Image (tube, rainbow, N blue to C red; front, side):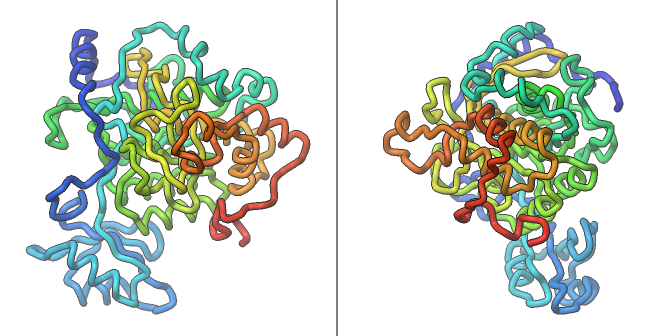
Amino acid sequence: MNTHTLSIRFPRWLLSALLLALLLGPVGAGRVQAGDPSPPHVAGQIVAQLDPAMGATIQEVNASYGTQVLDQLTEGIYLLQAPAGADEEELAEAMDADLRLAFAELNYIGQAPEHSGQDSWAWGGADSAPFTGQYALDALKLPAAHQLSQGAGTVVAVLDTGVDLDHPALAPHLTATGTDLVDGDAWPNDEGNGLDDDGDGLFDEAAGHGTHVAGIVHLAAPQAQIMPVRVLDSDGRGNIYRLAQGILHAGDQGADVINLSLGLAEKSSLLKEAIRRVARQGVVVVAAAGNDHQSDQVYPAATKCALSVTGLDEAGVKTPWANFGDWIAYAAPGKAIYSTFLDGGYAWWSGTSMATPFLAGQAALLRSLDPSLNVRQVALLIRDTAQPVDAQNPGLEGMLGAGQPDVHASLLRLQRGDIPSSNRGFISSSCIRGQ
């Protein structure tokens, strides 16, 4: 694993100044603003999958639409360049209706829900003491759970802005199988570039996000290995083709769990297919529900083969910004979570991105106890031992999934060999190997 230091260091005064800027109002996870002509996407790019039943070639499709192959993700799935001057949104719609293709869609852009500091982060310095003394551990019964499992022998892939590869709390637990799909190299370091790449008036506003998420995975599953896969830039943005590359890379490199603390408003067939493929390999995928305080589905969290996670405060009440709805699977602590950050330090940060890796860690603890568990069994063990939070959230009954996980109870149930079998539509059968 490369251990180069960060190319950009953050002075303490700059971190404090950024905190003031980040206290501004909520921003959505890939929300399209009123008046936007089309969803955020990479200009001129379309993702398409051939329908194997039709027997067509990509050359034949390109001849029909004037498109060109930019890259091939896997057999039958391509990144295409639209012809100059074409309206790629209209072109994608026409191609999606073509029977030779299983789907065609724009190369949508998604982002970390906290990409502009949602709700805020606050610098904690080098003090590691609050890391193992925060409310989330007791809320999830993690101290007792760690008497039964600490995640040894498992790998959790964190697809995000990268990880501070030199962070003393994380470096011993990072795999050598990570990758940087933003810069196209093997060093997925979490670092800024000093630029306002997304034109929102802030620069590097999501730098540290992946490091913070990875630290929460380590907090929940301290003996699990973390595979850093950089799919988001330092402004917290990335496209679905790059994300699908990261998902398939993690699956191919032996991840047991994939953490996706990111999302977009658009339903993506590409992400659905990528997540389905790794789920059939046995990989548990958990994804953030988003920070818009609304019930509209966010993807890939709402994908049938992924487990969606929303955020709670220390009293088990939904945080003001967290999403809700009947598509939510679980709710976990997501307010003022203390975790690893840039420059070898620590920070508090809030968001559904922070709730999600607690579930990823729980999945790793379960897999460590029984590596044979499939995706559905992991999901149901978490669901059937979770503590409902409807009483703390009047008006949101049934909108916060199974509630807050009880990690210790899920491990005890697995130890007894009492694995739930009743699914009731919780995980699609298409996500299970051999079905």
